[in-house]
Image (cartoon, rainbow, N blue to C red; front, side, top):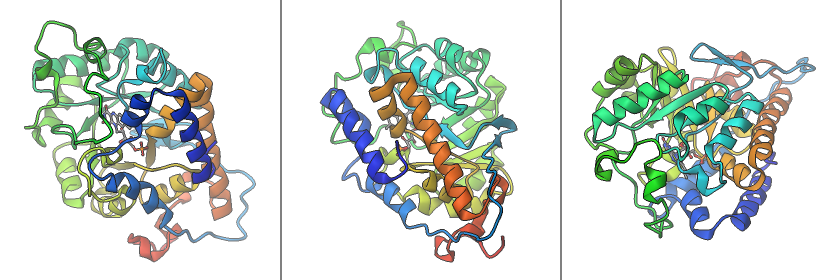
Length: 352
Ligand SMILES: Cc1cc2nc3c(=O)[nH]c(=O)nc-3n(C[C@H](O)[C@H](O)[C@H](O)COP(=O)(O)O)c2cc1C
């Protein structure tokens, strides 16, 4: 389904045909001039690889561990809100597809199905937390996620408020009943919007109230990554929210080497944004990511193929990674080091 960017565009086109145009644009769009949205995909393409030759690659194994949890592979599902706009069963279907593919799932705070119902369908999963203006409500959500079996929290740090997205033209796209699925009725909707005063101190607070490790999503700088680690984060997730927050923000492929160099020895590093092929996954791992997350590709699979589509799309991305690893002369994830990248990629890659 996506062994090349051309295949990915075909999948996206199929999704465009089946989705309501306003929903497609809400999913596909980015903020401002969509500079960062475009930069994400393009930047992976600029990372040249240095394959080995004459290695026995008759068996390639993509299994890995993320926060101590054994996974079938490093391709994971990013948190994406309001999936019932793409499929009547929304997140339930994504959860089933991800479980079949053995992929770690991240469930959004803006899930349009109840957290407990998604958990019942999921394999390994994390919960993506926003700190909401009502911190009591935030606490309730993360505790519900922990009780339902989430193994980590992802604190999204890049969304003190929403980016301005030209393609989100319908203010009524997310009706109140979808917005409130996990929140209940008895409060002012404004209190359930993201707080704009979230700080590094909230990492420890979320850990304490949920009892779960916290991964900070949206990190694009080495100094911030160090702050996160010092504040008790177990991982940092290099992301610019798929080009939906600060337009002009650096592409994730360009930010990843700096973040990995800053904290790669201290905490786990992940990446998302424009990852479309198995080769892109290989590039991200070579630049220092332990796992990658995909957002829009999963939405397109959900819209066009439901559970089978999600399972097949994720399996194909993992198969693409295994194929690329063999061609690069590596057989296990631990062998994917900076040495696979051309020096221009900016990481210490003299060794291995
Ligand atoms: C429609 C849509 C909704 C999203 N909702 C959330 C969300 O609720 N929480 C969050 O942390 N990130 C959210 N994201 C960002 C994704 O988690 C991820 O960072 C991004 O989609 C990765 O880029 P990609 O779509 O190019 O793979 C959303 C992205 C999209 C496209």
